[in-house]
Length: 113
Length: 113
Image (cartoon, rainbow over all chains, first blue to last red; front, side, top):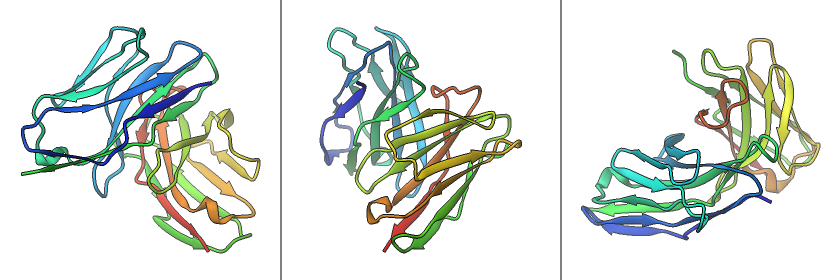
């Protein structure tokens, strides 16, 4: 079946530190991969996506590359800011196995000044 | 352009009762997906409605049911509420069953006592 596994949090970093949040997936078809962000008190927002192997999604300084060989989609940012404090969710959709969407459990990030 | 709205924002019910949650999709969208997000977990896909028909369902029992209306707004109904149904219920709207570009509402927080 389809599933997403994220690194457990919470993660606490100092401002300007490098961020990596690991995400691996299992899929029976050809999934599209996503990172969503949930800021405190706000709804889920799409951060970036990649629809095929070797694609790189990027937005707001965040990047993730769709690696089919390692079934991974790790989120990275070179220099985090306090405003990046949020919960980050890795997700996949796989139309080949029915129209469904699968989220990971989320990783809470706190950036301290 | 109006975003995705949900009502009510909060709700308290007792075990065994029934609940109806509502979602208005973003202007121009004809697809609504519903998710359950338990505390500290990622959202889980319940089902999707496209042009008033169910189009894809996650691993939820039949007491979770839905409707979509001609104006593409949607309802989620849960019968025989259980304590474990306590969660944030999210709806997301998109166009033509797409899951790759979906916009989430702020959610309805349901507490079952």
